[in-house]
Length: 275
Image 1 (cartoon, rainbow, N blue to C red):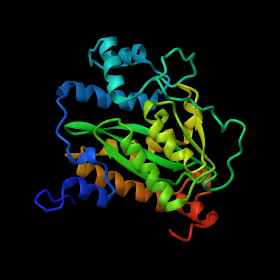
Image 2 (tube, rainbow, N blue to C red; image 1 turned 90 degrees about the vertical axis):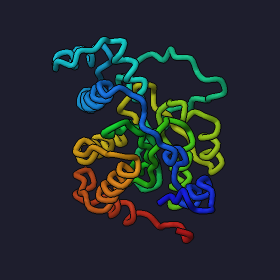
Image 3 (cartoon, rainbow, N blue to C red; image 1 turned 45 degrees about the vertical axis):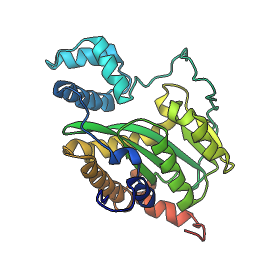
């Protein structure tokens, strides 16, 4: 996809192809093989027991013969971007200039496409390293509107995904995320506010606020990622891309009366003429 011998600079090539610049400069992460094995298992345990914190996960790993200390579990969880999902007092220090918006969906009945979108980031294990996956999801129809992979949990690949979704499908009434620094940054919220979109943010650690994205991650991981051992970012991108196409176009959903997300979304939506 990227031709490093071409006269056009790589930065221009990724701009034309609309892919994350960070993923092009991927180098294998210098993470010990044992840590990669532990992180893979932590990710699986987090999917099954989202309420488990470092202490419980440490006990579960030790019970499987994967001896590790609680502090090291906490370090790996931070690197993976995961935490116990339960409602708790928010005593963390806000980043200067990062505004936290209220959660708008608790008393809102979402009953049509493009009424509310949600976005989140998840950890994706590979054979030798890992990447992060960000996706924008239509709340009502479960359709994945856009996605990006990155080797770092920065803001830029999240903005790229949002901009693609906005360009293709117009603007939702409400856009929901968690309170991660990528989503509270001024650069990210400016994109939404500039389109007149109401910003909604989950209560910190409250998994139910963004439950549809959590269900998407579970499907992606159990039906695609955990069955593979991606050798490269390119391979991960191809595999996840193929799965998300299947998810949108062929995978029936019980919550959609057996329809696919594509059928549910496009049956309801009058796409912008530009699309």
